[in-house]
Image (cartoon, rainbow, N blue to C red; front, side, top):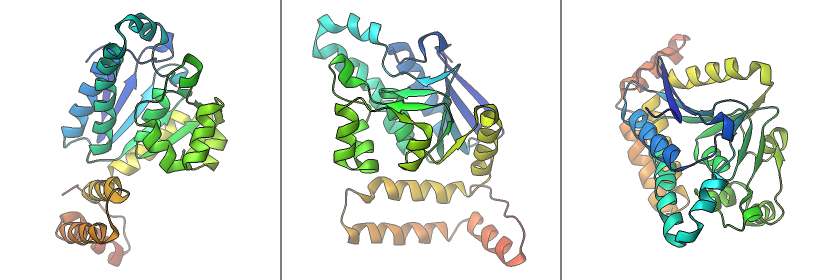
Length: 261
């Protein structure tokens, strides 16, 4: 795996770590290739039951590498089209991954880095983390699914306010707005992320995957279609080992031992 992205596997948890700490894990073409390869690999690996996305050093990701973007300015739209192919394929892979994906936001998440957080299934943050768009500061419109995820999470008006006024959210405000599940003290962050990801890895991953698929479709199709898809998916879930184990554990008043089958 490329040095700009590290993948660590620990039991059922795979951690994808952006590794350009000297550049606040800013996104460039090399990172784009490496992130996409890492996401495709852990998504397809059945031994991986939970994925954690985080950054090395003191930042999660400062977004696109501004020096790199300035260097492609002369290529006009083609340079940005090439850059965002990788970025958007990575975002789509996170959303399609049939397992929970956790953003462990260890510092600033700006621009595309903020989009990465929003594309994950849930996010936790250090108390010192900050969130912002930043595109308008260099004359760009958002990418990375920002306009899709942020408008759905906050509503169009509040999303536009963040875009127009370069609003920076503290970790506590991001939690209050529902963008972050939980905020941990910096000193406890690594241990708390390990505990949360291990909890998810021990869960009913087939049921998680079907729920994720349903939520992905929920805002783009009529209620009747969504109801039928829920009906079909709960029937499929009811035929799994995890369902039999979960119900037996409930009746026997013991912890369930889910196996993802």
